[in-house]
View (cartoon, rainbow, N blue to C red):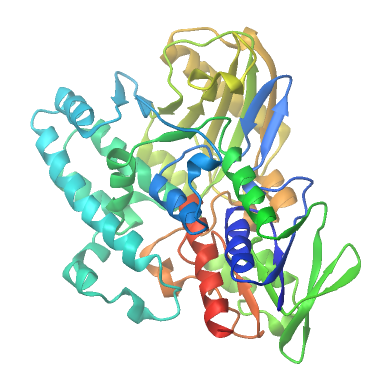
Length: 485
């Protein structure tokens, strides 16, 4: 039985560990932090529960497929509820409410722009076709060859890889609020809508067509479920176990060094930050130079606040987007001229609105996120400055005073992403899915220089986000199982 070491314990690492253990391999995970989960860890404080990282549960079919692969269902591990409304978007002069069905969403679009409901149905129908192709064809391919992208379906849609999602949306809709609403989902892919191929409209189907869900107890319930499954399959999980080196002899990995000790392995898989993972190798075994990494386009970093309130808040939903400033300008300040945003858009999550287990009775759990460029200066003064900015806007837009009701707040930003996750430039979501960073053009799942060394996660195939990370783990397991079949 071959022994496999997996570095990190995020979604992709747990995924690959489960698949390989199920195939009969001896698998052990080594996680530098005291708890499993990678960027999807949890904070519990004074009766409040926070998901530190991912907070949107989209593409429920991907999670279901993962557990189905082990003859399990998501319901074996956690309760899943569809949110209605899915979320609210606050603009300077209006609020758009995204319901849990296409009819509700079309009615809301029609309220804002006459005739837009029919355009939306047409747009989402095409987005659904793209979703079926993307999920059932493209993302299940390991990014080894450009020919993977060439299918009957993609050839018929080749123009969609050279037009942007922004062009596609603006062709159909005139109202800037509707445009922002439809362009927002691709931000999960880590790039400006004007730089993201229109084929990625499948994210709009994931949003409007499949809906927004919530696992009771928070997103960390998925991590707990995967860790439990991994344990049942025989995976050994080691926390407080930072990996200091990937050991290589004669061009083949022989294991890792962890806490000063050598741990032998036939195969090593890193679900840690790809750039960091390569620094664990001697220089001659690294595939990509510092210049290569520096030139790539990264998904944003984030300034996050975890806030406990001593009362229930009003005029909000579980998920809330504050687009009451210039969407384009903020995007430019992330991607074109990286700087702290002048007037930031932000996201506010109150899971205790729909899940009373997330806060003490009568209290509210608040999670606030400002997307920012990676590699920015990060100081306590800047964090406090931006907290004041978003609190002022939050109080104004929701018509309530909340600052005097704050029991505590904790923050997380660029320095923390670097320190806790070894994240390159402190990015939060990995490498952006632009046209030149798609599929085979992303860093490879398999090392070209070290035999039996593999990589998984957001900087490789298929890309950023929780569902793609689950798929990334499966793709690596498939490569290994096929090699040693």
